[in-house]
Length: 264
Image (cartoon, rainbow, N blue to C red; front, side):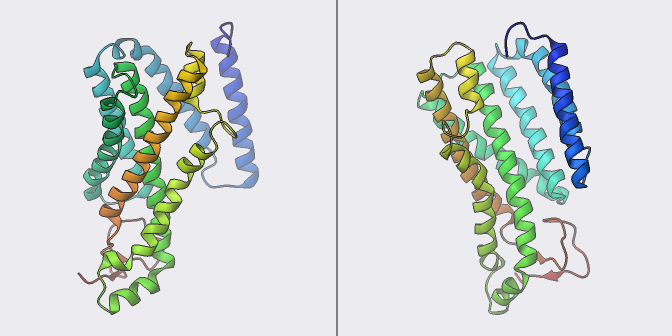
């Protein structure tokens, strides 16, 4: 993207790509066909606002911390809405996002692998929080389907006195493995299949390829650690179901009279 590229040209390119996406989704008759164009529009608005306020935020660690708090709240809300769980799970989801994101960030900055400055805190924090949100959503959606498909097996475990957590163990492990696939594959194929955004951005910003590679390796390691911690925390929250669904109910949704309750 050269210096001569105008905002109008960018808007045209984005609009054409959004139309292509919408046309394909409509042709395939997929659910929620307007979701992708709406996501692009939201990204344009959100990035526009972000670019305006970053000039003031990037110079202060406290403002960056406040901005990261907004990211955590937004990530928690997205997971909550995607999984359609009860409001009682809002705080546990927020705790998962915070804890799983904080540990890798503390390690990275405490070891000096990345300079503890507002711009790096914001960049790395945003990447890690976003990945944590994705792992939560993927694991939750996968776990809901597995609880449905493995209901008979789980009831068999419960009938012989196993705890709900033990009865759900196979489903939880499978869901966690599925949720970690994207970040694992991204790390495995970096430099071969993909050129990660952090690497490209650092090079465009003037860093040497070696420096950019060092930063990208730290980012990928932080993403993997955050994903593993997210899976562990998510297991603690949703890994011992109190009810077994008779149909495809949202994970942790409101209880209904027709739902089998797991004995405590």
